[in-house]
Image (cartoon, rainbow, N blue to C red; front, side, top):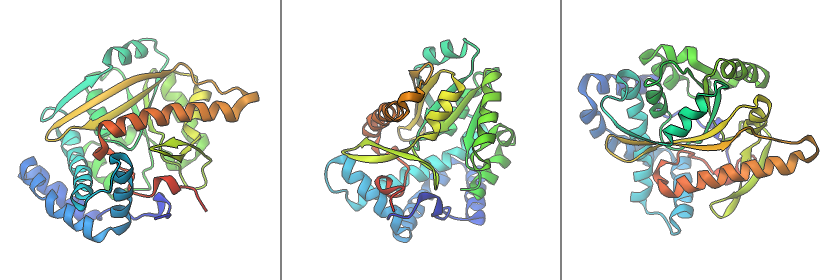
Length: 301
């Protein structure tokens, strides 16, 4: 349970992901969704660390011991969203009902022309955000993503939407390269999206209250936000079942200030604010939480 998330193997493999993609695109979404039930049962039985991580998380958020059914519901939600990534990238949002909250705030911030950082978490669907960007093709979207963690899925998604590869900032390249790429994108008025709840191995973490116990969150995203000095908004793509998604945008900071003389306290304050909003949306949609490892023990010896 204390194994770092980056050391966990990618679910499935190239053949399995290719097979699911082929069934989905040839047989359609109803057939592909029917296959999620045996897939869910397989992962529930075969992936004990993820099963236990789900149960421990659900115990916390539900306030009582989670049942096997609830754990399988959690795994199924992840499988459903993963499947929908294929359809969202192959066909856009036309088969989905995507509602948006905070769009006026997003557009007014973008109108400043300074670029924008979108801070998310491993909740719900990031592809729903990409689908929304098709409504505003004049505003480029760059996504910070570790392409080395899930190579099979990355290859599949780039095959479905070749332009995605050009718009990804690869988080595995190192801090200086990431910062320069983000600064260049913001300088062109782009949206730059990254997930701020997981720390990579050897990354500096700070603990803050989260679902009743201090949990580690990375400081890197907030140092990046401070150095870029552009507006920051939070974004969450919540899956609401069936073909329904809800995109939520919230103003967060403009800019993120981290004074040199009080750096630690400022970082703690920003991380605590972020964690509180993540916790809020975890309660809103608990089965959308997709950190399938012991989140509270990350970075512990």
